[in-house]
Amino acid sequence: MDYKNAGVDIEAGYKSVELIKGYVKETLRPEVLGGLGDFSGAFSLDKIKNMEHPVLLSGTDGCGTKVKLAFIMDKHDTIGIDAVAMCVNDIACAGGEPLFFLDYIACGKNYPEKIALIVKGVAEGCKQSDAALIGGETAEHPGLMPIDEYDLAGFAVGVVDQKDLITGQNIKPGDALVGIASSGVHSNGFSLVRKVFDMTKESLDTYYDELGKTLGEALLTPTKIYVKALRSVKETGVTIKGCSHITGGGFYENIPRMLPEGVRAVVKKDSYEVPAIFQLLAKNGDIAEDMMYNTYNMGIGMILAVDSADVDKTVAALKAAGEEAYVVGQIEAGDKGVTLC
Image (cartoon, rainbow, N blue to C red):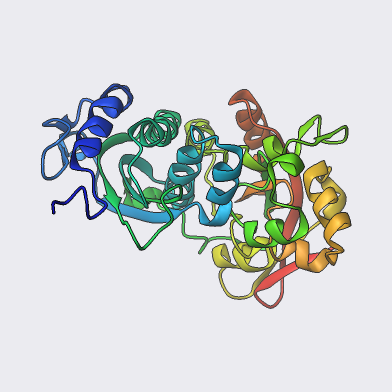
């Protein structure tokens, strides 16, 4: 009897590491010390010495049951982008710059080529956010997970000068709300998605004219990473007063998280066109509109609160960064919360 007979293939683990080295190397920043395979990832803090009061930010998350679609479609090279996005977007939401990322893959059986594809996506997410992939773990769990399944999660660390923290405390009535378009469903609400649509290869390979692609392609579209977009706004001199990453809980849960007491966000639903994937979800699942806005991003992945005088400059900066942006509402006096009208 040996470890391999018990279901853990150490040699496969070694092969996985060899296959992912190239992807990891593409994400390295000058601050990264050491190499792949060390017991911990080392990252120099020399570059933040010029900050008056550097503050570390952290975020951890996974992709939820979106990984089920990757299993069915046997497409594993983009789900890693989702894992990175869910972490670094939260850091960017506080005004921070992501510095480094670590991934954790739990699998029933280590298939090195599949692991390499997953990490390829993680590396792509890191490149999109200028974060270094400085470590990770692939854990084989025979008997705990089916051999053809895995789960993916990650952890990111970022930094911001305390004076640049986005806290929402200065939001006041009259401020404008600017929404940045999402790329689709992102990584939340997939337990409901899987109840609405048949989770079969045939169903996911079905082409929909209104989507301009197959259902699977639309649903597996990676979560958009907003790090560079928010940086572009900051570089124009605009002060982002508040920032809300629209994830699980949709508009109703996430927008109030950036608000101080005494103000209310008013969002106009007709200020932009809700993408076809959400319309299809609502129709096929007979999902009430309030539940849609309480579950999904509805086409807006990030909402910024800025002074009304900075609206045009904010939208221009976002569009210059390649993002679609809309003025979706304003801040009014009232009980803390959000009104959709």
